Length: 316
Ligand SMILES: *[C@@H]1O[C@H](CO)[C@@H](O)[C@H](O)[C@H]1NC(C)=O
Image (tube, rainbow, N blue to C red):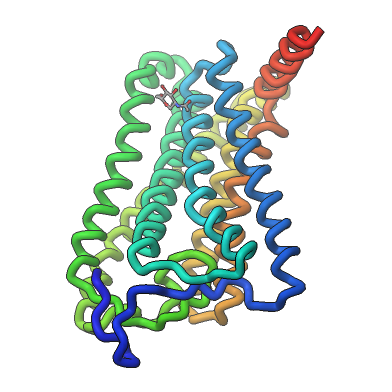
């Protein structure tokens, strides 16, 4: 992973993340926009964690997963946005190759953890709706803890593997990366030896895992929806559906985005398309998740109301 002689005969130790062009009028606007998004993402997700920790009614596996997901989202936006904000504010777009790798690895770990937590949440809803009688025995606190732990273990070991792999590769791609954080996907051939790129392809085994997990998620949702439709009373049906609709929306958004990114990158789109997709994926989804859970969930509404009442009582 050290840099060797670059293509223009100079060793690369520093990269330039081009970001969003250098129109001087646009930079302050973008800075404000991303600052607001970042603050909303931080406070929204933090609010969810505080509510789940503080409110006894939310001490259930489903909300533990939601809170864990929020924690992941906070870290996720914090790997990309602070650096982007700093470079928009100062105009300094350089980043050392070393920091670039660090950012890349964190991004990989957190996006994997996010995806696995969403899958665990799906399994949780599947048990709750399709096997309601066995739910409490199957989804205990310990099982829930294990699933969260495994999501992290998998993500971190995947990243270590990737790192061991990348140690053998030497970066000699372009010095300028036309993106706003360190993601090597938009770079055509960043590493010196082309043969190694082939090896990198073996990491597509993760694609197989992704498809497997996706099919499981899909099947779970088919079971969930079939069970809900079998509930005779309208109110019962509504109640069952309301516990999983937020999750269904989040998961659908997630997979639709992953697939769009996957399909579009195969057509080598212009950099701007990739940037917009990344803003959606790395910046807006972490904002949307808490919003979706808060807006659509009666239990969260109640917890929020109670917390506000307590706060008001403190003031008086
Ligand atoms: C994450 O999940 C674990 C295990 O279920 C739980 O104990 C913990 O409180 C959760 N984390 C947060 C931030 O809520």
